[in-house]
Amino acid sequence: MSSKPIADDRDQPATFSWTAESETRIGVILAKYPPDRQASAVLPLLDLAQRQHDNWIPLAAIDAIAARLGMARIRVLEVATFYTMFNLAPVGKWFLQACTTTPCWLRGSDQVMRCIKDKLGIGNHERTADGQFSLLEVECLGACVNAPILQVNDDFYEDMDYETTATLLASLKRGEQPAMGSMTGRQTSQSIAGPTSLTSLKDSDGVPPWYAGRTAAAGGGDD
Ligand code: FES
Figure 1: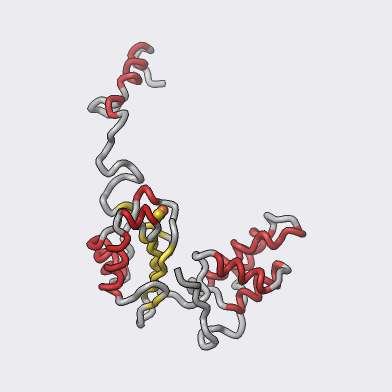
Figure 2: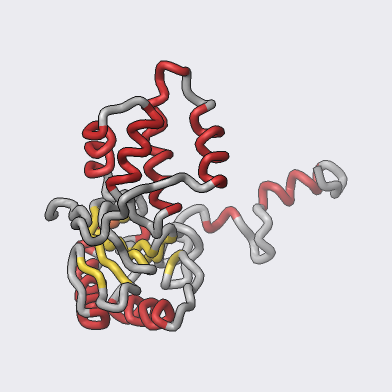
């Protein structure tokens, strides 16, 4: 994976100021940490800055966070460059994070990447000319059981393949964001083959026999 890009001077704003809403949120965050441990708030403040500033963090915001937490600028920058969830250059309105780690790769993440290249013409760390889409190839997103995963902004799209990726991108281009979750319709992380174990524990009404027997013995009441 290539290193994280940092916006050049043309894109860097000269200053960064917290909004009133962010200031309120900062007060809540900082109250969680002892006065001599305020640096522990660096992650939530980076996240807050990114959400306030079109999903990327300018260097002026790094300075603002360093000043607020009493940290050296380089310490804040180290954290921001380490975590893939922080962007240090402008990204598209739809920020795509495609997982290509082994479980997702075995389940077809190559198709997802190929579809994004075909439909949007962008590769890793690239943004479409209209500023609508950015792509970042990421390591495990922690949802391997529904691999492959394509994250769009804060939402996970699961069980992706070439066709479902194409459909999703077409919707996003129209400004519509479909419901997140599995693209095969399975509920949460159930087996793709449907229930395969403990199936005898339910009768046709969905009531476990042992439970029905228990309520009959108790006089039919529901406890
Ligand atoms: S490997 Fe892709 S979510 Fe874990």
